[in-house]
Image (cartoon, rainbow, N blue to C red):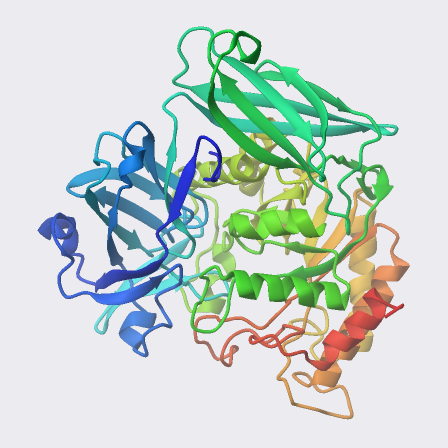
Length: 595
């Protein structure tokens, strides 16, 4: 599914702004047909944004169930001979969409895009009423999972992940047009051969009749043509290639054109064209090394969240650019999209900035053994037909497909993460995950695949190309005892090193209250966070197989209320509003010693 873009054959319109909005806790709107007319009893709500923190009302913040959005758009009269499409970049966690009185789309999964062809539903020049009902309920068959409980005070959502269950239209909504004869998808795979680069491309089309032809042209960053070819699939050779590399987000531009009969030489018109940024680079795992362009790469960075005051998980370009500037200031070269696919704007920006990304599905909380810690019902096992079942697995498999297909052309993405902290200690877990790893490799054979584990005894790691572990020695274990924590951490990392695979510590951190100071090692103080991180870094430097350190977390973030969470998770080296704690300066000295 190609991103909407403006070009010689395409046009797009953002539908961002204030939409009519109404919560529907009783679930009456679907039976009452709220989409058939102006949304009754509505208030205005910004799109994109999470709705939870916009209104100072717990009934809004903690709402469980349907939330309705509606807007009216005018279809441009100039689109009369075009295909008209409505696209949602994300609707968390599932959505049903009507245009006027016609149901046009359904989608499950809160962080990947979906769209509907409106060509036969709307008339250019006329207005169209767009209504979408977004549902935030998590069940044992959704990704991520959860449990909805009925209480005397109403329905309550229990979930197994440690971040707030923000919901709504978090990302852009687009109305766009394409020709009826069009390019429907492009896939690129790149390689390096000495000073030359290769770009294997595959262009898919729809609606073409007769002898339509495909032509591709590759241009460098100055707009100069460096390679071209005819045909829907082929390999472009790029002499004296400028590779995409960490810290050097050099991008070429691949333009694919769909031509009329006979092609350009015979005067065939350009039926459609699409421009795709391309970074030429390679990724591979060799022993305990992670190689980008054949050079060992060491991950320095963070687990992050799409999270900020007021807007929740709503995408914001200003916040995105500020976060990247802070990552550059501190010396980070990478981050993980914990714990869901981020907005495509984020990956496009990472491409241009040369920031490396570990791309993760929304499969967080697949561990019912620890669900009691988050106030939910305890259970003995995770992967069975009463728990995380074959139905969940099918939902998860689709989430893997949508992640890989959406993001496989981004040079910044170097590693797929199938899940975060599942119960990976049983043979049932291995049976659950094996098809997911296989599907990711089938869809994209060019990148390593892994998952993030929290178990010393693990039966899924053998499926992974890279060991990714979350460990909290000195916090959840050996709290306040950094000397004991250092011994335990090093011992476990050496056990993982014996697997002969690269090891990335994808989470390590200590909750820290900004402004709390102590002269001795006192948990929650800024000084303890500094010494906690310094201890981990000493250990990482002593274990050769460790090829990455991602601190948890970049910034403090919102969570559900809990006795172990005071106004959210405080493990950030920056506060939620992006003010540095003392640890930020300590980390900067490690990651940017020259600064």
